[in-house]
Amino acid sequence: MDAITLDLHLIAVATLLVDGNPQGFFLNLCRMAENGRRVQRLLTDRGLAPPPARRNTPLLGALAAGHFSLAEAVAASSATQWQQGAEYEDEFLWASALQHLTRTPVATLEPILVPLEKVGQDAYASRVTMARALVSKDAKSFAEAFATACQDYGIDIEKRARSVATPVTSFAPHRFLWLEGLALLRLSERAGIAPEDTGFNYCPPLARVPMTVTYSGDWAIDTMPTK
Image (cartoon, rainbow, N blue to C red; front, side, top):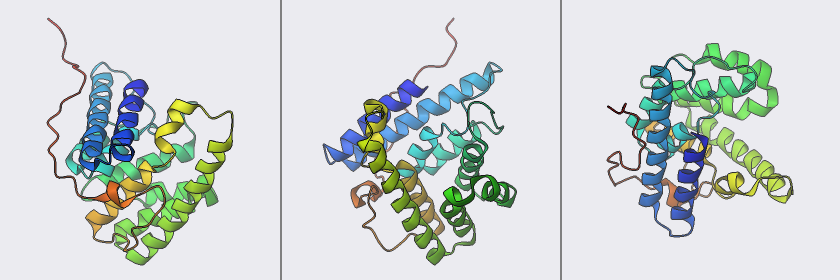
């Protein structure tokens, strides 16, 4: 699934940043999400574990496109158990929180956020605040926490960009776009608490316009058994 996800993520980002085509960007994010959903469903049907919860780029893609029904379908087939050795506990907990935030109505998050605060500590403080703000519809808290998280993302991404050890291809779609940030902004729009500031780095206004095209399920792998 990782290869398909990366390829479609790269195409989506290029469609936005090179072609200046936000609707094409959204379509490719949805294609990425649908492929992820199908692979997750196929693994479950075969009695196999889905990918670790932290590998949630397909979910983030559907959210960033504002295609909430697709996002809920991806979340429904995502891993719900911590896969030790494949992900850290804080990664699993935050991915679980995003799954819960995707669903409507949002289930209680405190059983996830309280342990996340303990194991994630400062690294997840702004994310925990954003999650709680989305549930309580606290626009001020969300905006402040999002600005902090966006700044933290920028510091990390610029550090990685300067490192010769950073793998070029897998890093490329993250260099100038923060997919998780775009997903969180869509969730804030749905909650009616979207920040008034539209000048966030790595979350350009062009990536935040409404999705007006319809995704028909194209460019998706066929998981039906052959006869």
